[in-house]
Each structure stands twice: as structure tokens, then as C-alpha cells.
Image (cartoon, rainbow, N blue to C red; front, side, top):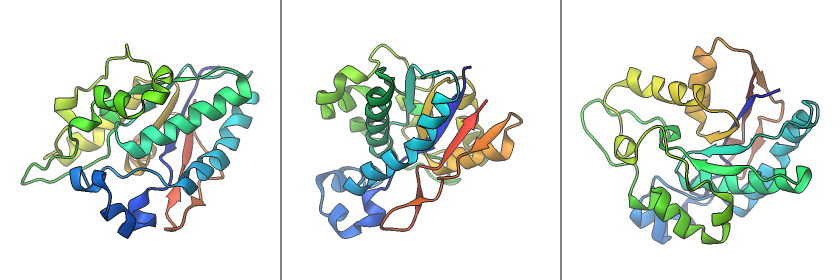
Length: 214
């Protein structure tokens, strides 16, 4: 039976090791785009056990795609997820970059750039060229890069944006915590929380929180 799994990205380096993060090249380019820690990879593996078991109990239905926010922390989490699923089921879900899954960000009185050119599909494929074969390069994002590059001015529009995007997707969806919370508050469908949603890293933040949408 088809269903979707929402998962929050894993441990981000700016929360776990802020001093190390501030000395990286990526911080200078875009401080809102931290990558995950080495421990974050282990957290994904731990969290995914619940989804793996759920897939096994669902006639081994393995989603064809992983939809990911263009932020590095989600891309790297998605790469690990794809590898885990492939190792268990011998089927590798392809990663689709969906700009509309980017983090909620509202500033009513001014625009601020959230996404730089290194968050476009073209640059993501260059950065992760060793993993290029697991990306669906033919996918066209529901929202365009230019639409998502800056913060929203209208809170209501911004809150509803991920809800509309997620409603059109089918598979594993790797996004941000606020997007998942927004869905939970407004969803009329049947949701299932996985009990391992308290996976914490060094910074004691909950990572890899997961929800199943039936």
C-alpha cells in the first residue's frame, strides 16, 4: 500500500559544533546551510530502523523516490536513507530535489536571502558527484528556485506552502522540523508518529523525527 514517510534531517554541525562550523568555507558563503555531523549519519541509521520495519510490514512496499529540501542537511540525510533502503531491500530510491520543502522562514518587513546558487540542483550534483547516480536529474521541482530563494513576508502563505507541496508527493520526504509540525497541526489525514522521534545528538536537539502519512 502506498504511503509517505516524513523525516526531519539529522544532526546539524552548527548546533553540535558551532566553532568548527564558523571556520568552514560554507559558513562564509551561507551560514543558514550547515551540513550534518559524522554522528548525524549514525542517528539516521538508528532512526531508519522504524521505517524499515514498517516497510516490511507493508508488503515490502519500497518508495521509488526520496524528496529532499535543497538544504545540505537534508541532502546528506537523504543520501544515507537511500543507501540504507538499498542495502536492505536491494532497491535504491532516487533523490528528487524539491525547493518547496525548504525551511519555513518569515520576516514580515524585509527580504533576506536564504538560498544561494550552491543550493540549485546543478550545484548539488557537482558537490555530490560521487552520488550523482542516486539523484533523479529529470525531476522538475514544484516550486522554482527563484520562488524559494528569499524568505516569505506573509506568515500564512509560508505555513501553507509545505502543506501544499507535501500533499503532491509520494515517497520518503526529508525536510525540516517546522514543516513537519505545520503538517501535523493542519492535516486531516491519518498520521502515525514513530516512537524513535527523540533521537538526539550532541546538541540535545531531536533529529530524524518521523511521521507516516497513510
